[in-house]
Length: 421
Image (tube, rainbow, N blue to C red):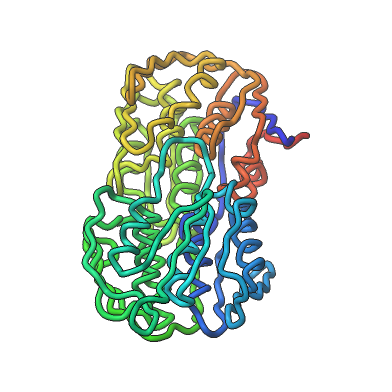
């Protein structure tokens, strides 16, 4: 099993190109199931989750053509409407084939998903939303079985649906399903994340009629068919945020290309509060720091508030910042699993429920640690970059799910990171 070995104490300097967003690419790849003609995507990152999604689509009969520049999907001859447990168990985003399969083909059999062990992320809102649109839904033997064969023209019916909790994948699944429904669907308390907006923009290029993405009310007027389109995946704001924190922690100066400050306002505000200097234009962000940071309080919440996917990185930063900070996690109940690993490196962290109290220390010490989920892994990498001596991070397959060429990009900035097995 691969490990990352990091020699700490290097200030990061230079430029790095931010990849396309994993959390936009996955739903948009699933949206390819809705198109009757070939569908072309650029900016798709080279990630384990992307490879898993493409493999899943291939098992359904989607023709997948991929090179360094683009991915082309042809779903004109889909032969299977099932996502098996073996395909779904490692990646929760596989649930995103449910809405497209049901909307276009009238039937779907999708395993209940797996993924990072960061807490309960129930799919009941997906199921209730599809039921509101008339679908027959049953869960048997760990599979969601769905059908529209009893509905007029075998099509989902437009509906008004209020989501009890803000859910990104739920919003995306229902938006894709509603694109081919008969009538108008209104999703209330919808997720506002930039990745939801990117999916909506892509669907509209395919012929959908979606308004309000990026607000808490999305209106979808169903159409009879969708066709292929060309779309470029939005930049990965979490990858960008991770490198921004790395630059601040190491006292370096890093410019991120293909990065949008308008997608990172909460992160930028907190980094400035910590003492980093940040400048930006329409397509790049530069972070400069002397490494002497002040502790900042963080509370995660749905977009546009502080993202849960940046919580572990900021906790790592707070471990070496001056002062005491609180980190409050409101999205996932198990998202503090990186705490005990940071403590192995000398961090002073006390967890009470969903709140971590972090007392900054003068320095972390390199140690052998274990990655527990994708963003926790990123937090450990950041800690390793500033720790004294060598840090060995085990189980880094989590990192490969969400960070394209991580060690290559860090080394490009002067870090000393290598992969070993």
